Length: 419
Ligand code: 7TS
Image: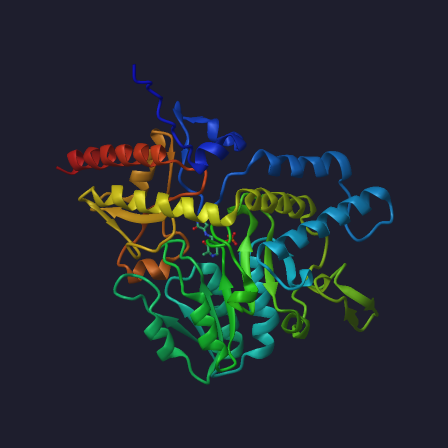
């Protein structure tokens, strides 16, 4: 007799972690939830939810203000989370990490605090055509006040970052380059190390918008050598209301405060004040304490899995998603076809992306439709809006299959209506 053994099914990363996310067991319209909108905000594992409620249940108290026990516990946990963020991006010094509400606030902090003080009429700021509005509008506001001029890196033929055009824009007039690391619409990955080295060669500062990279891949600000880097906690398993700004120590010391108020001062007089050292100089008022602590828990959770492992698994999902979408003739995807993030913005002929999204919702599938806060990019792409499926490490290939089936059904449904 030949012994038969049952084939061992290897578990995917998603299979291992899904149980950590209570929301993923939900049904929507009586169908299992397929959450494909993590680029907008990620879901939260139980450990993060617990960290937040534990703060409120056991040691809710203000930070840096009291000498009582609860305040000490809150301050210690809040500062421990800052160390975790610093380690997560490999900052040389934890004082280089400033808590903000989100990436948008972090960019505004740099725009107002550094931009207003350092940009002059005729100076140039290089952005790309794929920036999220939060890395565009603040610079428009500062340009209006200072007379600085905004320049935009084109898209290459394959809808990626055009390095040659970037090089042609860089000049002695360029004072700042502020670019997205991973586009939330194209899924393209900017070659940030090269971008930064080219800018630094002529003394130009660089800000990296890491909103769509920090949750998905290992980051090393020292290796990258960026001057600033911003991210939002809510896209990386943490609650809303917490994000961070990394900035090089001496550069951040040279900048004026953004908000004034409690916590950010050394001495206050009626006519002037002196300021606290970093990071407190940029953290006026009572911060999002529980959220910062829960961000620390999210970082522990992510690093326990391993950012390299998360990235490798998402690369696999990304390839699979693209292969499946490519089989649907009516679908036009946007952005490069390879070396891309696990998200896909697409249109389906004449079908309105909002209609698609509404139909998919009926099958329990959550995708986003609209301009994803990249309206100028959509104009470049000659699309008023797109639909977007965006994945995280808790998504499975089976979910991609369900999405593709429902997408095809929706396209066929609308084809019959239009016929
Ligand atoms: N930068 C990028 C690249 C983003 O994708 C986003 C949010 C932001 C900045 C702003 O983040 P916030 O947390 O400050 O709002 N992107 C999206 C999205 O793609 N869908 O919803 C929000």
